[in-house]
Image 1: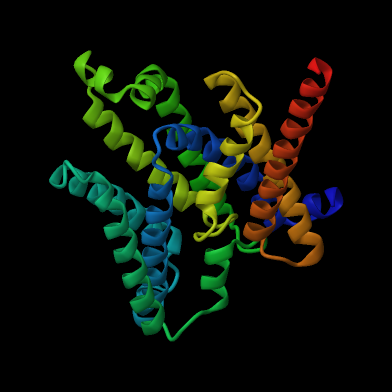
Image 2: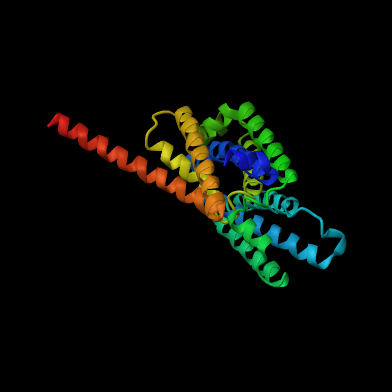
Length: 284
């Protein structure tokens, strides 16, 4: 495997992008899970699908756009979706959760329209849906690296504010924190991570990489920082194992990554149950 990575540029791109995504997706996912916004990742992923399908349709219809990287329109659609979610949340102040199914439905609707206009599924679109080891270009890798810089900078400079907002939104607003703008920026950063992760994990599965490693870590940690560290470790293990499995068995990497993360979750749950049973037996 190491020889193959050293020999083929597409494998170098895939593994480098996967390692980066294995850090930023669970890192941001901790805040998403704690703030009970897990479904937002699903909504934005479907909006990204609409952008990708639209880009593939335009590349077929307009000759000058044939070389356009679909990732750009996917990112634009994801960011636009995050902005619209925030606008709808402000319109439905007492029913803010309505914003998520509205945008999710819009993403699915536009995605279906563009897919039908593009005359159905193609290999490119299948790769975006479920990830592809061979499809990650050097340009895709550079985009993912740029998104990672933005994410890490945002978390570094606004960690305390995000921490307070995650656990006590009312106190954060009462204390004078610019909660609205921080949440707005958080949504945009989330949109960037989702769009950037789709080449490896796939649009339909990217939300899993942002939530399952966090759910796994929460079973064995006692502090917020421990949860962040273990979430990243579980995320990296899932990505590396998933990519290696996908390479050797010619499978969609998104599926192997997600199945690996679920397997880790089940192992941790079983471990916790065994430990609890042993403690009860020791006490008895």
